[in-house]
Image 1 (cartoon, rainbow, N blue to C red):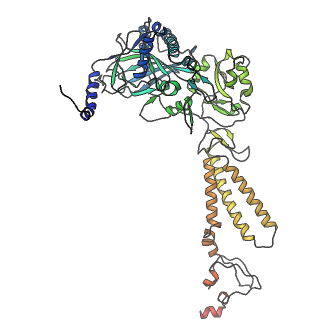
Image 2 (cartoon, one colour):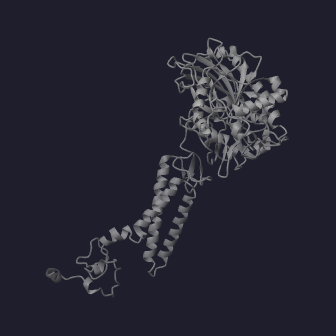
Image 3 (cartoon, rainbow, N blue to C red):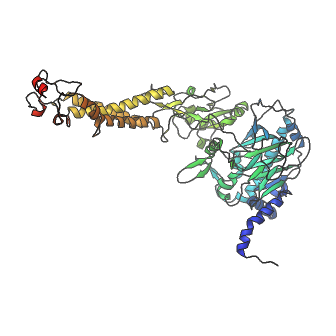
Length: 618
């Protein structure tokens, strides 16, 4: 027997892990499997097995009596091309795999959005697959609630309006579930199927509660999925082995980090997808999300909602796909709007990215699914969710305080509801609403940004001092900027002028200049209070320029203008302005540019005008 010292064992550990990792690529790892009946039985043994799966890999599967071959065979027969449809998108992945996606969603857990694609022979098998996965997800959430959450009296999640969720089921029923049918088509260029091969989707975790999916099938065969890889509790890559006719549940970032009680219980599964060369595979998954307004990160400096997170992921152009929204890579969003500014009428909003609520053009919630909502009988309402949550209140009651957007009420937000369920409530956006797809320079108008400085091009137009001056285009912003600089320079010149007449006996002119100074000063203060970064810079820049020209100790006016002008001419014996220096002026006259003397004053001898005789003699 050979004994190793601790130091040697430490140095050999990375080598042993590498050998172990290489060994795991030769055989797949079975994923813990449960039946719904055993999972719902409350058996302690099942609870321990489930707890172990959730804390090590975040992966387990549910055996079902259903057969999914027919649904996947139908998906394989869809004749996709690059033209795309309303619900279809084609993407090239990291290893040049071509992935075509049919996207849809379920509102809550009871309202699946209908979708269709004429390129597929039939949609019925796909709809049946959706129903089975949704019903199984409900049962799994019930089991998780029974095992880990019920009776704990803890709040699992809270939104920014103070609404609390104490079970996974209540979270899902308040959220939208993202659904994708994927068809992966791999060319023959990839020859390796090991973990070292190029990945269609590289290592990442999904930004949601959990993903329920049916393992992929190879088109034309009934081969079980071998393309899914995950990292175990030691960080070692493992190829997953799934059972026939199972539904797999994979934990996302939300279960590990957003659910307050489970931060030390659930592990988000880090996984990758590697498609064997020359194969076409069909796949379906339902990503269970949290409500848009749910708080997913909070500290002393900021509060981040799920809606904020979606925008940051969608606008992240980096290739490091550590956290991915939904089922895989998300393309950057285009024309995405944040909360917009004040508007006087609903016609100022475009109804394609924003709608009228709280006297403003406000971002449409779940705008990516706008057509899905409108085509499935939903309307968008401006309402107070705190009223809607009350048991004895209706949607109409919640919408009443918001008056279809024509009131400044910070509690009013946009929410989608079935039109038939909202009797008595006036919707802000329906299928018949006039929609503008042309993105404007800005929308509405505000005289002050309430959340700090905004810069060159923002979604809210600036109202420049009076209601009629709305900076709704780049040309108007440039004119306002030039005017602001000019007003700032004029203020400094007014100060200079006041000082120059301060010693006179006049009263009217100094008083008028003082009034002009106050007027300009307060107008510039109002310009700064818009919190427009461009106009703020123009004010400061104009004041600096005016100060440098007239009021600085060594100002440009004294240095380059006054020295080149003649203060007094004695050709006729009376003072007058000239554009030339005094002939024969000596330093005693020009030093400090003495003010012109009164008529009765006597100039120093050295500054007396020279006669023609003296000039000739000089």
